Length: 295
Image 1 (cartoon, rainbow, N blue to C red):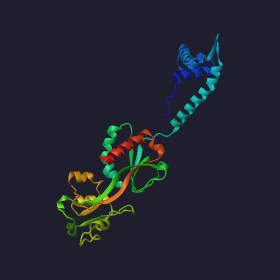
Image 2 (image 1 turned 180 degrees about the horizontal axis):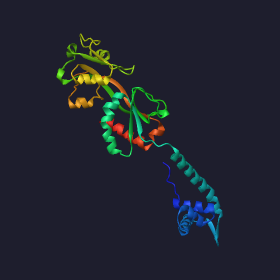
Image 3 (image 1 turned 180 degrees about the vertical axis):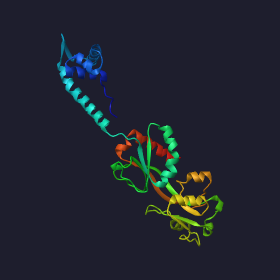
């Protein structure tokens, strides 16, 4: 742990730098928008703190002592560096909104319903949702932060695990399914999976369940996973989908998860560049996303 800096008051240092640069208390006062008396007071305070005189005071002029001449260039360079850093920060483009990239289904089922929570807790920041099943280039600025599904690693990005996904059989309670064997008389709903690895489909589920006589190729084929879920809600059949993304339907009882087994999926990760992750608005979004994943 580093020791705290023991420095004189900043006001005294600023007064000294201005007075030393102008070699005039009056000009220093004009620059700092204070009275010459206030500058003189700050300089007396600084000299008392250091235990050294910094100026030789003559009639109508001042000059630096040896100690003052030693301190002035160091302090000038420090304040100049401070001013340059502030100027560079001021020139950086300010985000009108934090852009979050996430998969289409994650955006629709987890982010949009939770927008009110973000706006209530962080009203000073705005959000822009970018829904896509293709990963965007965060380094290019296409998005400020993203939710990625997969095993990683995410090269060049700071990442944090949000939660693990799990996939299971779900259907309308009106179908009355109680046992895996009931699937042989039910309509299996198939949807297209946007990733090639770890595909949570009926073939993979059947490898775990080993239901006798189950034809995993038959049934209703729907390209969009969200539409497949809606078909299940409408009682059109049974679908394998993310239990995490349909928690609302399960809680409301419009869908049920009548039996296992469950397919263990990858994790959802929160990812961003190191620079973005250090900003206050992206940090607010990070906290919100963690709350969304935990709810």
